[in-house]
Length: 271
Image 1: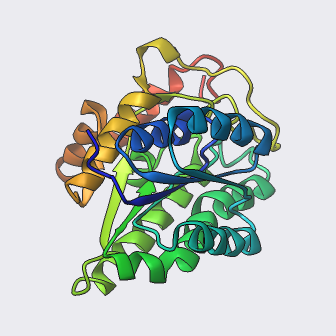
Image 2: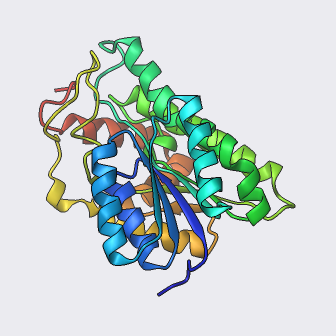
């Protein structure tokens, strides 16, 4: 399937997990791919692999929390490919700590990467996306629809992303820009291993059984299909869809279910 032939897809947080899976998925579908991440060593390995596969790619060392990095990356993509058809704001960081125990610098970091990273990249790719009548995507979470206990900074950043992207969609109702919020379920990736604890240190081992989760490759396929169909919102698993249903009809029950679910995690801050 080459349904993205002659299109340029930009992906942040592309050195591992969902971002890397997205790069492979769009490459297989014929797109030229621009990959951004902080880990340039991994990006170089990916770029070498993509050249062997015959994919057209650009790599750039980018920290999305730094506005100048995002501005430079957009300029590099314009010079290399001359356009941008799809921007996928995938870069993000998670956390695991109650607000009572949380150092506020951790919340600042969550907002800088997750929210401001999305804002900066969107700003500097914005004109190209509008010109292409392209797609603007935010990779979010069920935590952007309902508060997730022990994930205060994460939920706050995802709520902010939702409000930002929904407003961008409304402002562009009449010029063809497609905006999609994609909410995977719990996904087997590095995001939990790299999640921040109360003092900002990396969590390390995931508290969840990764083998039972959705794979990054499955998430990437669904996002690519959602972009192709220009979907407005993509909630990918039963838990996410149930969350939206219960939030409308039984929000108090949903609060209790979320608390109970998170309390059952190994070494939960609620146990």
